[in-house]
Image (cartoon, rainbow, N blue to C red; front, side, top):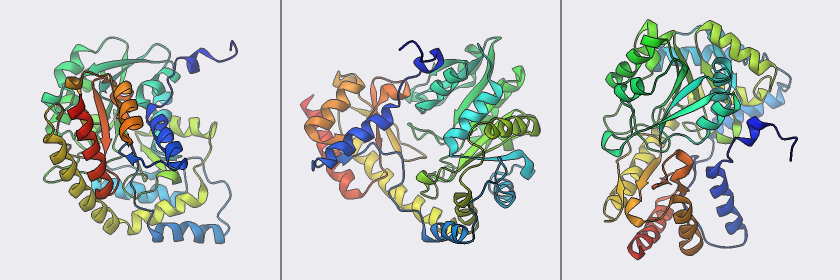
Length: 388
């Protein structure tokens, strides 16, 4: 159709949503499906968060708020970032968005102009390149390796910079790899960004899902110079099991925060009012929920990694964060879409093809489901691997 804009025509549909929807359709027909494709916690939103939103509704808090969010929530986020992350933001530097996905897109729109290049380490979250394309930018995909835990090196960053490079996107803990950058690794990457004043988009949505001795570090906390170059993105979806609530936020130097707020004022306006009050309760009362969630997912992580490591013709790097394993399926001899289609239709196991994340010789397996589902799903996946 000629009336579709070229910017939309360049964008690929989300394969992660496609697989999830296909699995849901099979379940709706009464078929048994073992879902290892999910990108959201299987636990329900805690009752105290729900109650805060219910109270807000009952109190008539259903009108517009400032585009950047209610003052109380922006203040609470600023306090959280100072306490948990060691980053000092004024509440006026915080913009509350309709999910961290919108946070990322607003940040990209605020910085990237037509023809600007954005460095994106691969494997990457599926939407980063498409957001860059929608903004008129050029995604520069830099391949990382399993040998380096799927992490970008400063040398790779420097080699792929040009005079057009405007931004780099870092996701730690990472989707789909579960990789977590150390403070030293982030500092080394930051030094490269500082050399050419490249804006850093730091997506930290999985911040609270790190395991063992691994620690999360916010790159903006490492120096004043890095603070001035960084847009920190976070939200409530993963840590508080609030995926459908659509509450995320950006924290940035004031000029960038103002630009992001301006974009939001002319697109969605404020995030849903009563959902913001639920987010406020999450910050005030959610520490125990996060602790329990982390402990549960660590058990599942170890179970899944152990099972996958025992399969001879695949490879997997132990994830240190998030709730995914990226499985190297090169030796199976199938491209990822074909593999996932066979796995779903013949073995009733849903996984996400790695091509969605820029690596066609892999699949993503999620452990945000019960141990029973994981056990049966992985047994079926092992049968699949033996058959190939």
